Length: 426
Image (cartoon, rainbow, N blue to C red; front, side, top):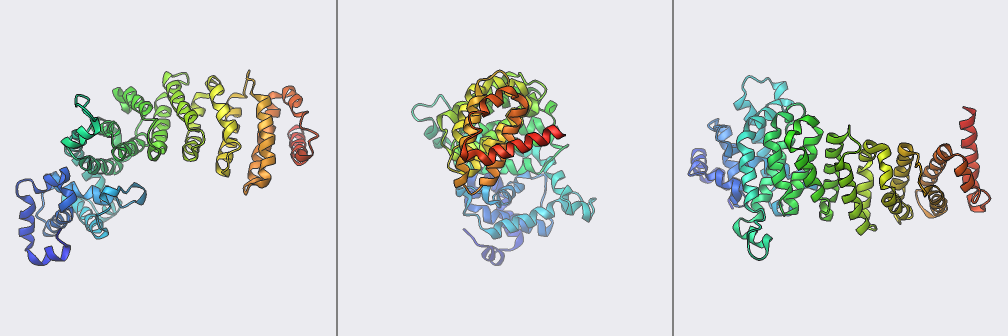
């Protein structure tokens, strides 16, 4: 691979430009040769920008830049793309900043600094770029007509690294556009995102999910149109994803179902999604990252379902009772916050869980003595007991009588009495 100084000194600028204009040079880079000659391609294009001889209509010149910029964030960096040096990213960013000046000379400096020009350019290019990226990702998708191992057969046709590069490029393009403009591009973005999420590679799936997360945050529910059920279905099918994708698929699913089904708490999609998530959590109840991600993200679904949540109590509460005594304080705090949310939404009506809940809360209060977050946990327990006292009344008092004289709960009992008196006084 040539280095930057070698290119600059061994060839003239026009020779470099010619090198990459010949017979689809950067078009090939889009399909994977970028992994070998990307450095040269970016340098050549940057020199074209400097010479002001590039044609923006030749959109393949833009393909190498989204990869360079999109992998600049540590959490999204693919090991397969880690070879790209920082100076290449810097060079790509410099070239990107010049493109809008060339394409939109009417924009002033303030508009250019606000990245209006770049966003406008990206929107113009999407019609040409996204179908190409979708095609590249589709080439290494599983063909169920293949004999033997499906993933091996898919990889034999087209190396998966091509799809990974395309997926990073796709996410970069999508995340450059925001509300209200992104809604107008749904017919281009959604098919490509579905292809990415349906891919067998976790890295390609992950970029598709991140694209959907950005999309849901920046469009109106009506703009999903005929794709609504398709997206919700692919969310449900991907809930049993690998550990590294669990947070993304839960966030994507929560955003999508609450965006499109908010006005219908009895929607079958709430039912299906909750069942899929709870089944997966029941299979791995001790997996800390999975349960914490779910507890952090699921509240909007609970809020949208409201009283309908009662139908899932038989599966939710056993998990919450188990997690309430987990080793890590973060899980315990998240569980207690979730219990408060559930009580406020449902007042746990007509359920047998009041007595069991009070019992588990008293145990959690005692266990807090050995935890670093003891004060926060004990305060959460107290607030839940106050809520239970308000909504269950005599039933709560009957249950609490069993613990009122417990010497290890004197502080809790005293605090509960004070809270009750304060409520009565108001």
